[in-house]
Image (cartoon, rainbow, N blue to C red; front, side, top):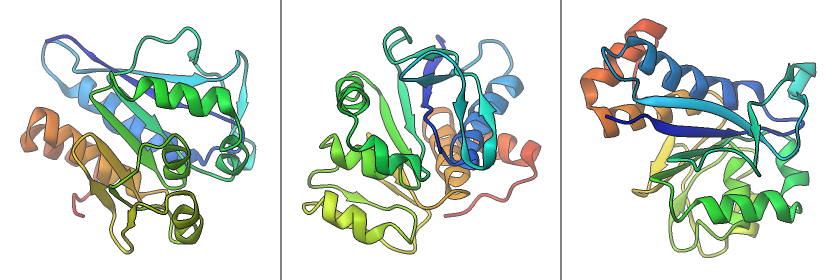
Length: 196
């Protein structure tokens, strides 16, 4: 089985757990897998060089939106930096261009704002951080906004609530693609209880 390319978008003021939780889930799943690694996880930014995440954490992304392998799974995390990025046409267009060929497009927290800006939530249901629900409603008037739910699975597009909900969504995706046994094994290794 070929590895699925998992691309996690990075940007200044990205929320640390928004990207680190999915990174951990997909990386641990590969680490625990016998034989072929099901996921090849990489971090992707608009420009080369370090990205300054929330609270001063400096991250060195693996590649840029211009040279990264086409993602099979695209993950768009949130954080205060999304407010600026919704007006960044290069990043929004990259998300829009990746979506048709990606197997899955995931957002964590306010990453859903970027999916909305790219037009990917039209006619779907979605969630986000509880403090950004109104902003998501403004950006996605034709989207059913779901409150008080860890994640919303539309099939190809999956959005999750705030910060730690990205763990639940990522474990859900592992179960969806590889079976519940694999998701449970990953959760057990992480000492995390699965639940929506």
